[in-house]
Image (cartoon, rainbow, N blue to C red; front, side, top):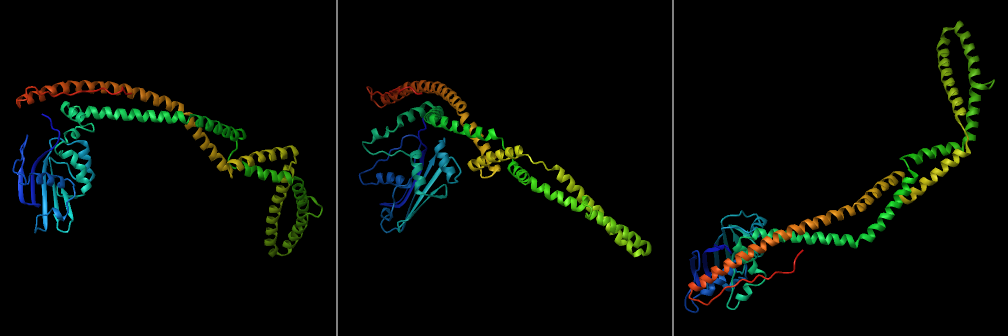
Length: 410
C-alpha cells in the first residue's frame, strides 16, 4: 500500500461564504463530492486552502456573520523528517493526528492553531506540501513536475531513506571537490607564504633571543662603558675608608682607644664604645665590598663590542617583530604555527583526495542499488496500475514508468 500523503479525516466549516455549518468525515480510499453546480463543492476545497495559509479576509465570511472558522484533522501513519522538523521548530509535539483550526473575524484578522498551539500563516504554508495536493482541471501535468514522479516511485519502492543517503553522499562529494579546487587555486599563495614564514622564522632563530636578554646586556654595557670611572670611584672610596693614613677606619681606631680610656674612668662611656664597635664592623663590610667591587671591574673593549653587536641584533628584531623581546618571541611562535598549518596542507590534500575517493565509491555502490530497486519497483508499479486500468474497463490502457539515467556521477 502506498502512503503518499497523510489523510484528511475530518473537515468542519462554519460561516464561510454560503456555508452556515458543515462537517465532512472522509473514509480511507477514494472520496467523491458530487452535487449540482453552485452547491458549494469548490467551497470545501477553498476552505482547505484557507486552512493551509491562503488569504482569508472578512469578505469570506457568510453574510451577516462576525466570525467563521475552518477545522481539519489529518491522520499520519508516518512522519517525514521535514514535517517533524517543522513541528519541533515551533515546539509542538509530534502526534498521530494534526488538528488545524483557523478562526476568521469580521475585522479581517485571523488566527491559526496547530494542535491547539497558535502558529503563523508561514508555518501552515510550509505544512501544505506534506498534507495535501490540490489540482484544478488541466493541472495534471504540473502535478508530475519538479521531480515528483521520482519521489512517488521512491515512496512506492520504500527507498526514501536510501535516496536521502545517496543525496547526502553526493553533497559531501561535491563539497570535498570544492575544497580541493580551492586548495589548488590557493597553492601559489600558499607557497609564497611558506617562503615568507620560513625566512622570518630563520631570521629570528638565527639570533636566538631569550626573554630579558636585552635588559641584562644593557646593564652590562653600562658597566663596560663606565668601567674606568667606576674603578676610580671605588678606589677613592676604598682609600678614604680603609687604605689612606687618615682613613675613616684608622681615625675610628684612634677614637676607639680614647673611649676605652674614658670607660676605665667612667662606665657611662661603655654604651658609646659599643656603638662605635658596631659602626667599625659595618664600615669594614663596606670596605670589603669596595675592594671586591674594584677588583671585579674589567674594562674589555672586545667584550663591549660583543655586547653592543648583540644588542644591535636584538634591536633589529624588536623593530621588525616587537617592539619588545617578549613580543618577538610570541611572533616567532605564531609564525611557526602558521608555517605548520600551511605545510600540513599537503597532508590535508591527501586526506581530502582519499575522502573523495571513498565517497565516490560509496556513492556509486548505493546509487547502483537505488537504481536497481527503482527499476524493480517501476516494473511492479506498471503491472499494478495497468491491472487497475483494466478493472476500470480500460482494456487497452497502459501505465508506463520510464527511468532515464543521468550523466554518471561522480
